[in-house]
Image (tube, rainbow, N blue to C red):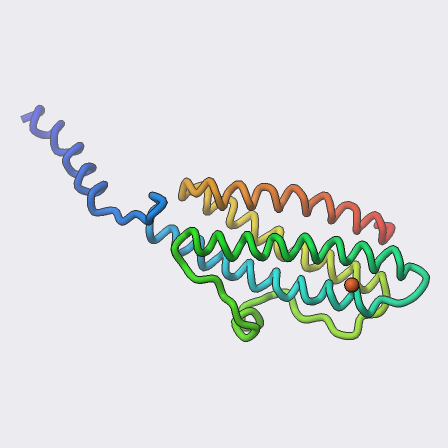
Amino acid sequence: MTAKKANAKPKAAARKAITRKVTAIGLDESQSVELADKLNDLLANYQVFYMNVRGFHWNIRGEKFFELHLKFEELYNDLVLKIDEIAERVLTLGHTPVHTFEGYLATAVVKPAQNITEGRKAVTAILEAFRVVITKQRVLLDLSDVADDEGTNALMSDYIREQEKLVWMYSAWLGQ
Ligand SMILES: [Fe+2]
């Protein structure tokens, strides 16, 4: 009787392992859907953030023009690299990245910035956008950890570390 009971557990576990659906890269399918959805949401925020920083690069005026014009170019070049990595991670997980302006604007928390010509306003908007994406990346860091999704986890870990440092530097520029 005891022996029969002891056998029951491994069999149930084996059945569960067989019925569990996995993706082409061996991740749980439903966890991958959630990760791809959250990555798409992150992508939407990055796209608006990116366009905002391009606008700051173009429209900035005043004595800090040369300094900020270059600094903003450096930032949007980094954002566009991350945009590509995030979109390609969605594809790697077996899903389609959002690829329309309508799609981005429908979900992004970062709002389009218009006619910002003053350096301090631009840097303040950049810090607000960093707070949004860093917070979303921390959620993805935890989720990817639970799903054993090392690829997404490593990306999020790098982004958080790099951007936390940028937050310090942009805050220091503001005198905060
Ligand atoms: Fe330029």
